[in-house]
Image (cartoon, rainbow over all chains, first blue to last red; front, side):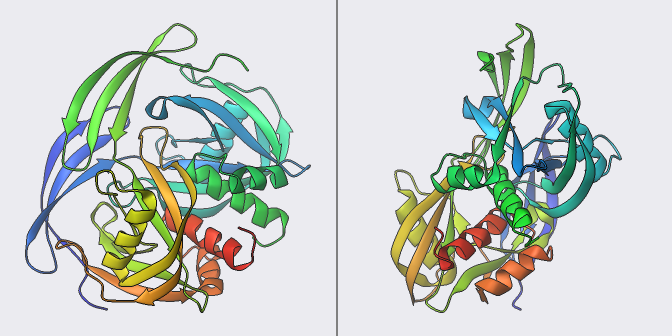
Length: 181
Length: 181
């Protein structure tokens, strides 16, 4: 493998906020030249692929300020301090949708946008669902939708899903119900 | 559908950089209360699912500063001003990998992280590939890998892919070669 690694020279703090941070790193390229990188700091998230006994995917509709629209998404959220992905998935799923999951396991984890952010999203599969009462955060306004997984795949193929983690979540759900994952 | 939409009250500019911007919006929630949202502004990107005649996926290895590691990814990049997703995909694919694609079509588009960013990634499928000479940007250091799509699916299932757009890209490639997309 040829030399790909950059060397870190310095970091400049640009912003530190409630959820996000922003810094500018100066790095030394493999060629020896210098370059700068703008980097978003994010604590990481969980995304929950929750499948009912009837092979429906649990989805939420919510207004997303940056996109100026209501999006249909799999439930997701930011883990609390020291909270595991599994525990965070259980908590977020119940808060946002009212579903308690008896079976939760981690499926994948990956960087959301590794070109400029350190955010890792951990995808968990939640099954054996029991409906309790949703308890969204005070500033969270959600609507829950149960959609048959074949219908979700059709929505995906026809371009009606506009969130990338949800596209991946639908493909995970499809693999799970087909016994491939 | 219950009221989900937020009203925009004001925006505060926090940063305007080379690639990224950052602002803080104050919004009015459906309940009437106020809340603030930190929003990353990004020009958008293309991600290229490039499949050879031998059903291999074209992947690139590159060091990603925010992740502090070399990641295996599908080619991707930011379109030039007024450049279409198709044209940007052709250009980025050739620059990063040397492959010229005779057939390119858009498959999906979606928000990368709609909770805090306006970045849309457009996924394009590139086929009928002819190998020319890669011409990476001056500050881009890449290694190209051709990986059989079945092997890519195995890498995905065993947790060896660490980039979400690449996970989705592999699933798109798998659907394409199975004639499902």
